[in-house]
Image (cartoon, rainbow, N blue to C red):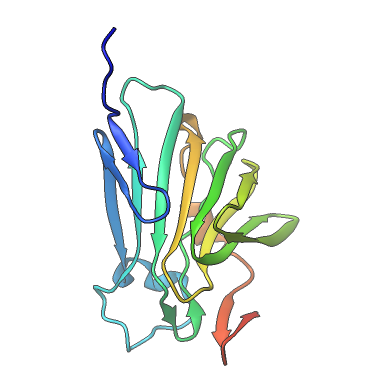
Length: 178
């Protein structure tokens, strides 16, 4: 029997996902400006808002593994957030788990909107019928891991057409929902 080294490593608390078949992209402010209520002239268009790592195996037909790292940035006092998405196949759920920092996981569908606190060790089941978005409410990098079915897909257009109805701000050191 041969003992092999792993193809990939996810150094949970302090690292990133490295190895074979890892995609990495960054979201600069210029690409997400439109999701915020106001433009912040203090941020350059190239400011990196968040990074995403996705591990995919071309042979695996079922599961994907990911990591989102959100930087502690506010946009005119609005907390840094991901674009948010529905799954293209709404029968497919997703699991998020908090690795570092603090934030919120906002869920939304036609009849309901709510958020869950996310922090190191927290685990979150996301029903496929809910749109979801991450929001960094802390003062450090907010790291969230994810596992989801390859079949889920992403529907960002639905959020562009009907955005989340609640915004999260940091005002005078407190989190404010509007």
